[in-house]
Length: 116
Length: 113
Figure 1 (spheres, chains in turn brown, orange):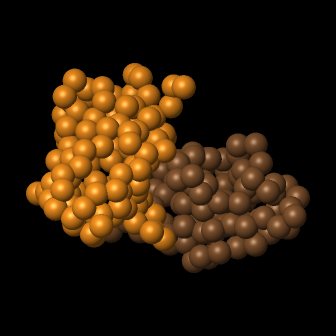
Figure 2 (figure 1 turned 120 degrees about the vertical axis):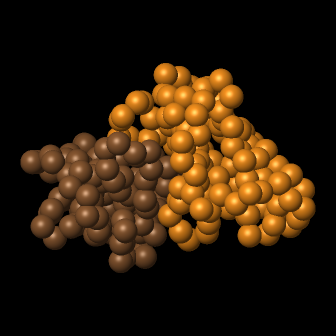
């Protein structure tokens, strides 16, 4: 069965420093996708970054990069140069398979607090 | 604004009442999803539409829940005889055909008293 594990309930980071949010996953399907979403206190889930299981290079989107280690089944999010506006909940998610609903399975999230 | 919209944003109701939520996806997105998020947890999948067809339902979707997408555009999620356990954030998302990325709306926060 699919599973996403985020072991850090909360993290602190100093403004302008980098931070890594951990995510491990479990699947037996060779084709899958991994996502990170940001959820501010307003509640909306904001898409940050995507990594496909067959992608050879780690995904990057501006200050966000995904450290994809397939053998370890980990997909950690790295945020560089943290900003106060990065304070939010961060969710790792996975979709499994190609001929399916593409529904997402989410982890329990990590609350990030950026200190000035 | 061309993002996913949801209405209402907040709903407070008494136990036993029926409630209905609406989701308007991004235009041209033929896939539409409903998720439920309880406090301190990640969202959980409820149901999925491709155009007007409801193709998958989670076991979380009890017989008190019904979802429709009559013309393949907006969708409604109705909860009948609400219970306190139904209190949650209900999120809607949409995506292009066979595309990975789902874009979420702001959610409807339901409180059942």
